[in-house]
Image 1: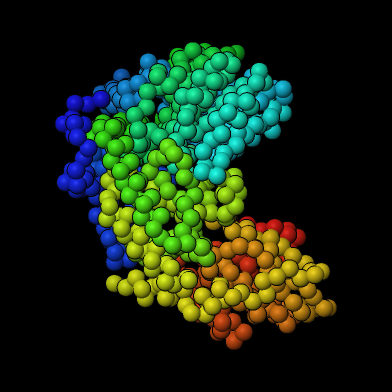
Image 2 (image 1 turned 90 degrees about the vertical axis):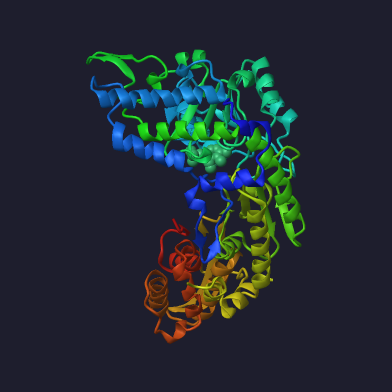
Length: 416
Length: 152
Ligand SMILES: Cc1ncc(COP(=O)(O)O)c(C=O)c1O
């Protein structure tokens, strides 16, 4: 972690103003109102530092990576590999061999489903939870369809918490992988992944953690966690879209067959055979998203300068305020009331459809997400077609929350 | 600059809110001749539209399901407009509504004066599908092979 002074104390309101100034997009009006951007779980915004890093790369340093002897190719390769090293440090992986660039969380999960999937057969089981994002459900369903394996689903309770004992009791010698979200995007629940990883390892089952919602908000140490795979997306952590990370423990990545074939992932090719490249390149076929990786590296620099612990502490305080304020709104039901939560709050209001709520709030400059949040099984569990969801980032303020609460009053005026 | 309040009134007009609060023909007919499920994956809304025919004439249209104010109001208004139409008339009404939602043309058809209250959704690209959901399902029920449609 960086030695930035900010780390010594949680950012004050003044620091927040400075931070907000780093995000040009926040400084605009929507329908004549101040923008309150509360849709960070879908995708966060980018600070100037990230936008500039991408733009600088295209203006000065672009060439293909790992291929040329010319200066630009060296520069592009250095910047791309430099980003990989930043990501390694950010999640404390042992080596850069364990950091595979993908297009996002979704692609990283599909990579594992496809590669690990080659050794899955009809007697096997994959274990997930009821609160997964579709991207941690469908690839496993497709794998099961292909192989005849069975998908097992660990239940949740009314607060949106994982039933840990039930999940553990679903682990057996047939279980070939446990795939679990670290933080639920629909409910905000922080899962006790340490307990699940330990229980799975006692039974020699590898674990994939979907960290899409966790990496932007808390310190991640993959060595401490000990999971075999940890996946996340750049765009939810102030980086560019179209870039994401598969962290895989080296012994596992060594063992797994490559996913896509093409340039970059090979050492030599003739018409009889190809010799695969070493890690992590074995899993990176074709020209990668170089600018995306560089932008993600810049995002990590930015987050580390603020300090992940500061971010987590600030967001926790703001979540408390958001939850308190929402609880005071009549006829409002909070969905997702787990004891351990990140800055996400879903809710429904009696007689107001989330979609209508979204439109009214947009008119007041408030951006929230409405709908099923790519987690239809969660909606089914709570017997709602969808919810409204406010999700926080470290650049949000009390003012954003107050604006949301005022917007809800306007919606109630119209619809009830 | 548009004031936020005025814009909102353009989409949530009084008639729209009245239909959404007290929708007409929201029920399951005993023995529908045809039906189709309309699904909007963006919001998870599902509406089933039913119709009963006597020869060429549509004698009853009803719907069931959950939806936002726009989709429910549109479905409710649709049941009023379509009941009593011939199959050919219904086809041209469906076409005229689809056109109304997808272009700037205002509706001239006198049977659609009520639906015109929904014109405001045109300024909300993400909400047009809500307004057309019931209509697309009706088209599928009356003329389609598929009895399940999706707005995507
Ligand atoms: C928990 C979770 N998993 C996976 C994803 C998918 O991420 P992406 O669309 O960036 O691949 C998301 C994004 O919404 C998410 O919130």
